[in-house]
Each structure stands twice: as structure tokens, then as C-alpha cells.
Amino acid sequence: MQSDKELILYVDDEEKNLDSFKVIFRKEYNVKVANSADEGLAFMEKNDVSLVITDQRMPNMTGVEFLERIYGLYPDVVRVILTGYSDEEAIISAINKGKVFRYITKPWKKEELQQTIDYALDAYRLRHENKELMHKLSKANNELDEFVYRASHDLRAPVASVLGLINLSKEEWDVTKLKEYVDLKEKSVLKLDSLIKDIIQFSRNSHLRINTDEINFEELVKTSLDSLKHFQAAALIKKTFDINVKSPFISDQFRLEIILDNLISNGIRYANLDSDEPMLNIKIDSDQEKAIICVSDNGVGIDHEQKDKIFDMFYRGTDDNTGSGLGLYIVKETVDKLKGKITVKSSLKEGCEFTVTIPNQVQQ
Ligand code: ADP
Image (cartoon, rainbow, N blue to C red; front, side, top):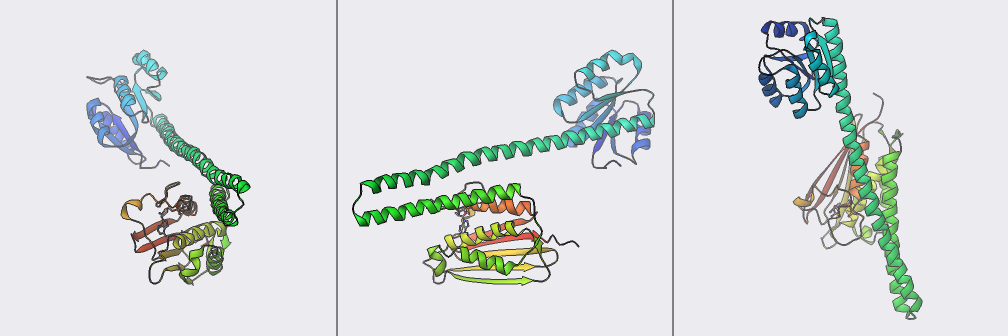
């Protein structure tokens, strides 16, 4: 069965040939006809054609010349020619130059032409899929290159800083100074640890298959909040959660942990501790279809121009240099893996609201 989405253009200067082609094939395919090469080219300028079938003998431009033009303009379009035996030489040369996919001798039989159309459309689909895969592969390759380059640079920085502080400590006898160095070393090691955690999350999300666990949201949120106690700011923020589960929710526990941990830790790290009551709220509603996870805070917020960039790899909106700039990128990649969506609403100095929607994997 052919998809009616792919458009076939048939070009012939004889009206009766156009009519019979239409009558024979219009049920199976999405067919358009043109009675000259110029009309065909004009049509292709405005429409996405997958396959062109043309007669060889036409006034002004032969079929081969027409297909050569198309080859130059739309190289992905599959090209088929209908011809009498006397045109053999021109056709063979066009086929050898890769300008024509197949030729059919006239008078054609329906079955033969139909088989050629099916092959041609398959070839078109394969080319199309191939192109998309190449595009994805090259994007993934570029991202990986950038990732390795940036990650190794960011891993080196805290190590270099600790080594420098160790050297200073060796020469230092003043206890106050030594304590200061220990604090700085701790800061660098924590940074290193958090970056390594991000890299592990990134790699596990890319490689591990998707699990189907029954999710206990309350436990997930409590564990995530517990793991953030080491942030000094955490104690100063009022944390509330509201979880409303209507039916069992099946998804990948590890990936949901990644999402919640990152959104919750950002809510704490970007709190506005000068405000009257810094707060972080987690609201989760789930039913048979989906879970909606909303993490909101009244922290420093994100300004309008940054909103499109915060999900980019290594993007940091502040220059305090504490984060890796990977958190939201990993969240976005993880949400994509679970076939979900993430949106953000925010205004500077007023706070942020991240909403994640994840489909329920429960067998319906
Ligand atoms: P990191 O926090 O390590 O810099 P993220 O990818 O987690 O990296 O976040 C990217 C940027 O988005 C942050 O640098 C910050 O500017 C902004 N951001 C993320 N979450 C929040 C939030 N809850 N409140 C304010 N800004 C945020």
C-alpha cells in the first residue's frame, strides 16, 4: 500500500496520455500531471514532489534534458523516463550519469509501471530516511565532540585548583590560612563531584534502556529533597509538595530521579535568600495517561532572553561558576527519552515554574 502523501508528477505533451495515466493510477497514488517540462518545473517550485515520470519525446525539452534539470535542482527526487526503443543511446547515457533511476519502454503495461513506481517510492523513502539519519548522526557527533571538549576542560579546572592549594598548604604554617585552603579545596572537590554526577547521568540517560517501574512520587520527592540537605540555602527555604496520584504510574524511576533532582536543586540554588519567604513547591498530578510535574520557586528567576538558552549544553545564566551548565540540558534529554515535554515560565526576580509532562507507560 502506497502512502498518498508522496506526490508523483507525470509529464507528457499528449493530453490523452496524461488522462489515461491519471485514470489508471489516481486511486493508488497521489498523482499530478503537467503537459510540458516548463509546466512541470513550475509545479515543482511550489510542491514537494517525490517522483517524476516523464515522456522522452517532448517539444522544447526532451525527457532526459528535463530530468537533468531536475537532478540539478532537486537531487533527492526520483526520476523515471518513458521512452521508445529509438532513444536508447540518450537514455543509457542518462542512466550511466545517475540522472535517471529507471526507464520504461512504450507502450507501458500497468503492472510494470506500477512496480517501477513502487520501487521508486521505496528508493525515495530510503534516501529520505538516510538523510535524516545522517543529519542526526552528525548532530550527535558534534554534540559529543563539544561535550568531551568542554567536560574535560571543566574537569581539569577544579583539579588544577586543588593541586595549587596543596602546594600552597605545603609552605603554610598559619592555621587560619590552612583552614581557608581546606574550605577552598572542599569547594573544588564538590564542584568536581557534581560535574562527574552530571556526566554519569548524561551517559546513563543516553545508553540505558527505558525501564517500566511503578513510581512512588512521594518517595522520589522526599529522597531528592533529602539529598540536597548539604546546600546551606536548603534549610532557609520553605519546601512544600502536593502529590495527587489517581492511578498507578509506570515510567523509568532512574530518569524521573534525574528530572526531579535537577529541577529541585536548581530551585534551591537559585533561591532569592533576601526575599521574605523563599519557597520551593513541587506539585505532581498523575492519571492513566500522564504525570504533570510542576516545580516552582520564588527565586532569582530567568530573564526573557535567556529562556531559550537554558536547555543548551553547558549554558550557564550566572557567572558564579558553581554549576556545570549541564543540569537542564540533561533534564531536556531525559524528558525527550521518556517522550515527554518540558516548559518554563519565569520572570526575573519573581521566580520560575518548570512543568514536565510524562506519558504513563501503563499498558492500556
Ligand atoms: P547550572 O545550574 O549548572 O548553571 P542548568 O542547566 O541547571 O545549569 O541551568 C542553566 C541556567 O538556567 C542556570 O545557569 C541558571 O541561570 C538558569 N536556571 C535554571 N534553573 C533556575 C531556577 N530555578 N531559577 C533561576 N534560574 C535558573
